[in-house]
Image 1 (cartoon, rainbow, N blue to C red):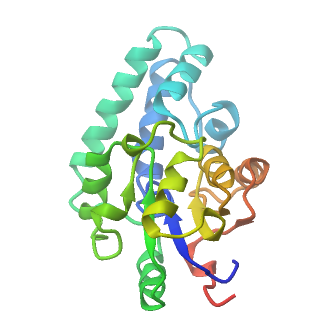
Image 2 (image 1 turned 90 degrees about the vertical axis):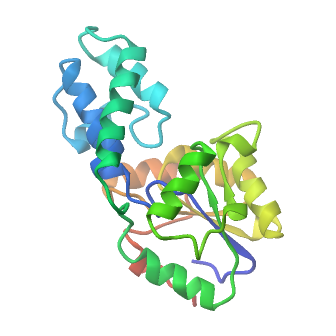
Length: 227
């Protein structure tokens, strides 16, 4: 990781708050079963084009095209939302990626400004940050969402807005992402982009590299701020 010059921006879901494995992805796999597809995570990553990074509408369309057509894309999308909402309701405190609090604490002690750059709705982003106990690191004014920009990921708008709010040049921004669309957004903004995937597999690593990730780590304990 390059020595931090100015600021950091984090995609929220995946690198920071771990809603992917047991939340979004589990719901998508249940939707796949509803249209006659029995897939493991690895198979879903390989066979469903938008499985990593979404958006959900695109994943629903993928499942419709691959499945038995018993549900249309809208019905698949609605089922996914229902399943995810049920899972989310049962979480007293939202799970976070291992090591993220230690990493953020070190960044804060170094005096480096931080922001969130997420394509989700603002209300959800605020709720997730609060329920994960991350407010001390990410005040609401430093949470940029898809509602704050004209074009969402993979366009650069979200990370350009992160840089603006942090008061840094985009070229001095370091972005942490877990999806190809997010990596493309960071690179398009001119930032240095680091992959922090939920699944550290060769297939995922290749997707992130192909999207332009300049470094890829398996977890927060692997990232050295001093380098």
